[in-house]
Length: 201
Image (cartoon, rainbow, N blue to C red; front, side, top):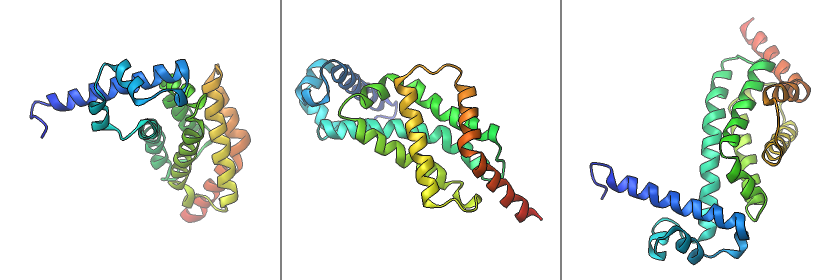
């Protein structure tokens, strides 16, 4: 049972943080496939029993790290997309939402880069695709003719954009997001605005 002063919660957070940092440092040095739970616990300065209080194995740790990154990404983007549900669609607004998503990635770029350069790439990319689809589902009903075919195009495109930004230094992200939105999402934004006009007539 956690203590009322939050000491246990802080201890848990510190332990999990040291495990994650050990995981990333070792993955960066030798690769995920070559590290063991013992390597992680030795590096973090904790016992194996302590590790197993938090994670079942290194694959569980990998999955939960990816899930945590996705929660951060969804929180940044989903909040803004919920506002857009009220019909506030414009190229500039959508570009700003994309930029917010990329800022969440940029804040954790080292972690994304390590994962995308190693064993975690397929797992992380699949989770990114799921989060993008979840975000799009927030506005799907506001856009006519947004079929599964179109959704797949957007999901794959945005996943590719995230991967590119992780692996490269992108200057002037704001302009890049605006250009991307105009070229690839402009007609979808127009369709959403046309539907809004019809609803309000």
